[in-house]
Length: 196
Image (cartoon, rainbow, N blue to C red; front, side, top):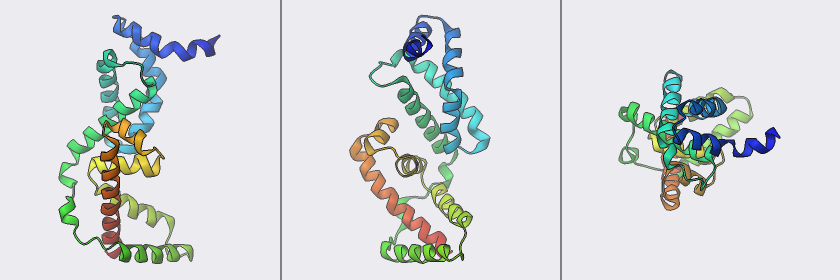
């Protein structure tokens, strides 16, 4: 019996909350706390994780009357969580952003050759995995918040272009264009870091 009621519990709880049973939100909070925490932890510096998770649940609570059941509650909540992370990153790290115009000289062939040399060096033990991870982490930290989240969603977490567009509230065309530009920007940043 618990498994059949488990499938309808989210909508039942949402109706209770919208109907005025504020305490029912505690059920949503307990059920999805770890899930939201995991999403936020992947995107936000540790010092801001707890506050961001709280902000996510405040936004979810306020947005509940607008939930229309066209997608799953979990998907809807994921979208709010990712947008909250994006908003925080944009606000906190505006000064760290690098404009595309500042990234002139995209020599992709030279970058690919350099990356190939790095891969060979890593294979033969001259580079270790931690250095490679730090290089990528450094390049990602220099992307704008929206570009960083987009790269993470598509290339690290395996979301499709359509899924990423839905989660971010963007059009599919916008995601495709941004994804292309992000890859070029990341290539340039990696090249700069490798040469440094």
